Every structure is written in structure tokens, then in C-alpha cells.
Amino acid sequence: MTQRLDHQAIAPEGMRSLGGVYMYVNKSGLPHELVDLVYLRVSQINGCAYCVAAHSRDLLKAGLSPIKLQMLNVWREAGTLFSPRERAALQWAESLTRVSQTGAPQADYDMLSEFYTEREQVDLTLAVGLINTYNRLAIGFRKTPDVVMPA
Image: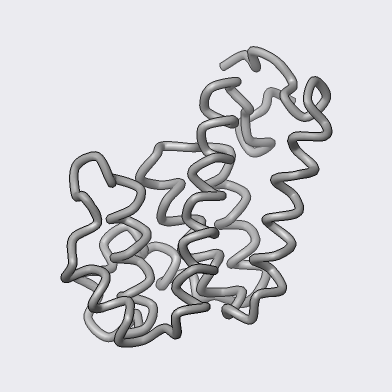
């Protein structure tokens, strides 16, 4: 796959602005592993090879078990491998990523509200929106992950 254009070089101010949101989420107090799980799951849904590679690498580097990483795509069937709090975040992330299909149902919001404060709900929603934006940039402009680049 050939990269269509280098969006980071063409619009550095816009990319820095997205980076500011990324830094906000990073400092929000949400656990980094949780945020990276959400980033990875959304990227799986969207089919973003660049982001799947990046967030898988980050999670493994941070010490996530390879089994948990492998089971993320099927988290609903993974029993207690994912905590109720993680499950609520993953459900919310999937619901928002597929918002044209789901409409962000009340049941998903109720589950989120059970485990997250209002501030955490907003911060998590910012994270979901951010990774969806990054996915669209990487997919739209064909940013190829280093792991599949020719030697």
C-alpha cells in the first residue's frame, strides 16, 4: 500500500492540535492501559493497520499479557479476563465508533455511568473521538505501519 500523502507534514498545526487532545487524554487520570485498550479496539473495528500495530506494540511494551491482547477482539466472550470497568469502556467505545448503527443506546451509557464519573465519561469519549480521527487520517492517506514496510 502506497501512502497517498504525508498529512503530518502538510498540516502540522492541525496535527499538533490533535496532539494536544492526545496529551489531555494522557494526563486525564484514566489508566493508560485502559485508554490504549480502547484505542486498539476502535482501531480494530475501523481496520486501521497503522494504529493496530502502534497500540498493540504500546500495550505489550507496557506489560499487557499477550493473551489479553489476543482476546481484545472478542472481549465479550473472554470471561473475566476484562474487568467490568474495562468492559463498560469497550462497549462505549464500540457504540460510539459505530454510532450511525447504534445511536449510542441508553443501556451502553448506563453501563458506562455505573463505572465512570462524569468527568471520566467525557475524557473517555474524547479518547474515542480522537482515535477515530487518527484512524481516518491513517486509513484515508494510507499510512502504512512500519511492521509491513518493505526492507
